[in-house]
Amino acid sequence: MPYSSIRGFDGAVSEGVTPTALLGITDWEGEISVDVTVDGPFLNDSGTKYKTRGGVDIKGKAKGKVPGGKDSAQTAVITALTGGTNLNLVLRQGDAAQSNLAYTITVPTAVISSVKLGQDSKNGSTIEFDFEGNGTFTVS
Image (cartoon, rainbow, N blue to C red; front, side, top):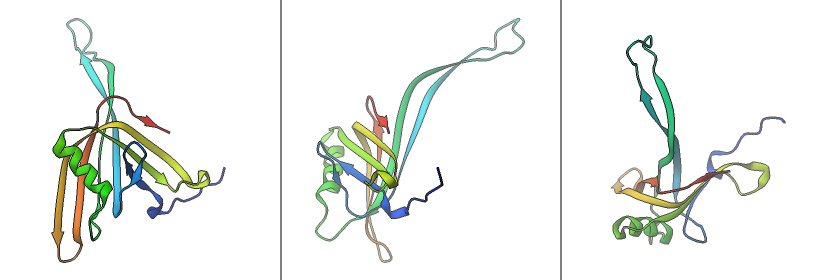
């Protein structure tokens, strides 16, 4: 299969039960990790360390610009943080067409751990938020 580039602006971040795209998002990232427990070294065992895999987790962030009049999906992210509720997040690489779709991460019970709102003379109004998985997630 030949290599096919994915345009930078084809991705998306969506939220909600029926995922609604957040407007103005410029980039996102999700980091998947696994807990590793280390045992050892033990006496009379040549200094060997033994590692065991534990739980799998995801965390990430997204940032972008706030459109004039705000965006209801961006507001839902802020409300999830201030209201202490989980949020269904869908992060997509590529466009929705199967021919140009890369990975999609779905976090059905994301915890919004921080939101940063800003304003500067060069970039205008900005939003950044961090999330963590709370339970299962999928990568497809």
